[in-house]
Amino acid sequence: MSENSEKTSEKIWVDSAITETDLHSIPDEMTYAGVTSFIRRPYRKDLEGIDVVILGVPFDTATTNRPGARFGPRGIRAASALLSGEELVYGWDFHPITEMAIVDHGDLPFDFAKPAEVPAAIEAYAKKIVDAGPMLLTLGGDHFISYPLIKAHVERHGAPLSLIHFDAHPDTWEDENEDGVNHGTMFWHAAREGLVDPATSVQIGVRTVNLDTMGFNILDAPWVHRHGTDAVIAEARRIVGDKKAYLTFDIDCLDPSYAPGTGTPSPGGLTTHQALAIVQGLSGLNVIGADLVEVSPPYDVAEITALAGAQLATNFLCLFARAPWRTAT
Image (cartoon, rainbow, N blue to C red; front, side, top):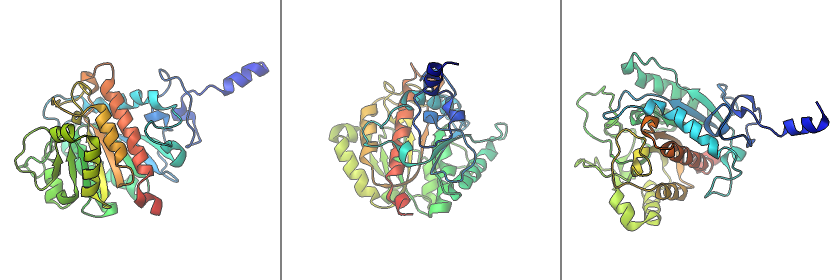
């Protein structure tokens, strides 16, 4: 090989997800080729020295309408390749990769033939990760996965947590089955069990009726549209304060025109711009973990839902980097 060929080959990044050893590098790789981890982060099971773990949970058995969110982690990872070579995350003055050791842990293993056992499997696996030290960013899957994930975070951080919840639905419908696996009842369970504190929690973008709010502070979609993103940010920051908070984002918080690829779409939702502006405005809150759920690629159009999910999840990493509790420990 000639000297020029050697120099050229040194500049080409290939399959960074499995070849990269520097956890703080930002690869310049073809967006349409190669192994697709989340924003090309190296796949790694070893948790030593890791700040953030990306975990996929391809579970959608709790869905009440259209299934398909089991393909969400794969779809979000593929869409995230478009974002992987950026030096900064737009809207922020840094990139989380340069400040935190971030790895893609792959997908959580579970027996699809035994759905009743999946909640405990999610909780145990997530607990193993957060107990080892890293923060956890989870890609769903349907929204039920937030319930066992919150349980795992409570075991490390204590209860109750505040909840920052973006969604078209409040997910606080009463569940007559205490052991039910339903993606519309998780926060009814979480509030009743004292895992989250409704008084210091905020639900953003809701536009379905549930007369029993359980005391959650709701900034519904009309309120967001009427008052604007700055007012939403100010109110959310006031409600949550300095409490440790878990952030969960159901992609159907976005209007179906911006996120058609989801199981329970509801017209009248947020724009992608509004959602990103609000998330960026939450910088400095004590976010201790997050999930991005309900991306259903079979119903997507030109991958716009998966791309919105990938963009939002990348912004969640920025929130992680600026969380006061993390920098104080």
